[in-house]
Length: 305
Ligand SMILES: Nc1ncnc2c1ncn2[C@@H]1O[C@H](COP(=O)(O)OP(=O)(O)O)[C@@H](O)[C@H]1O
Ligand SMILES: Cc1ncc(COP(=O)(O)OP(=O)(O)O)c(N)n1
Image (cartoon, rainbow, N blue to C red; front, side):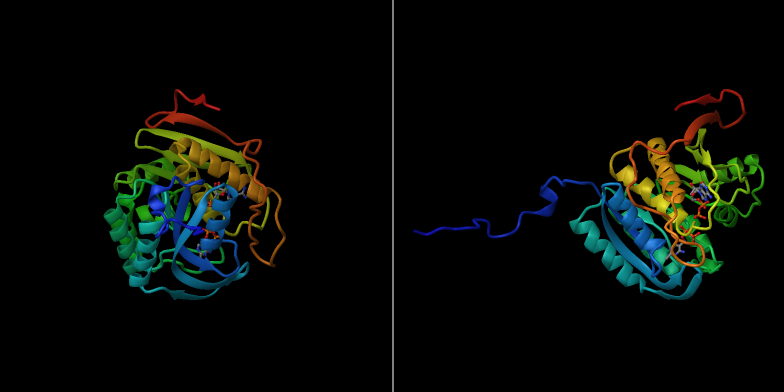
């Protein structure tokens, strides 16, 4: 008797199988300390039920006290990683983090327009918590003109929004004006994060869709363990979008996730320690709320949730 255990000559085409979980990809730098960069992104994807692929842009020697060294990856190798992931895995959403140079930004923008990514989250990483530069100064212009017009959403913190727009951001009116200017470059949504806002009562992030501002606020958490908050927030948003959430629900998920990750620190390292990605409760964290406000005036505010 002749028994054939495997009748198929070739493995099935991956793209023809319905994936059991959504996939997302991060294009970012490696943080040897594990709190930010590719490591934070992949942990966040996993915790939120999304398979994570990656393309490395730079290797950093880094811990909770600072960045000791940066070694960029050649742009052609960044392109090759993106192609390998795009052609086989086919992520539903992409995220960028540390891109380091204008040349790497050009390579990523080229691939983003080639593959026509509809869900591209750009976290415009510039400076690490300890003050080290993660983006060369002459690359800000490339970020603004080449990558932002291709993004679905960009997630600057306040210093990054200041560097992108060239304006000083102090009051809420400044944050709204910065969001309007960034939106005018072609990105569909702007999330201006408030971790550097100076308000020690609450952390307030602002979502702008070109028409309406939505505020996401949560109680401020007094902790030194804030390394990688921006990466983790943007990765959670990417996971939400890869799972099919609309933008406002994706931001709410990200806000809840980062709030939970900041709540019970792991107490690792002597400096800015990593946040805690374990055991996120999808029901969310108490105290996060959001509201809409018309772009032009303050009237008409109403609670959505
Ligand atoms: N101490 C804190 N308490 C509560 N939320 C925070 C705190 N620090 C940062 N966040 C939140 O973490 C996210 C990342 O914010 P931010 O610190 O501004 O970004 P980055 O890490 O890029 O500098 C935002 O949602 C912000 O509101
Ligand atoms: C490799 C790498 N990528 C990004 C960052 C910056 O991460 P971010 O989430 O903005 O956090 P802080 O540096 O502000 O803690 C990084 N440090 N390293």
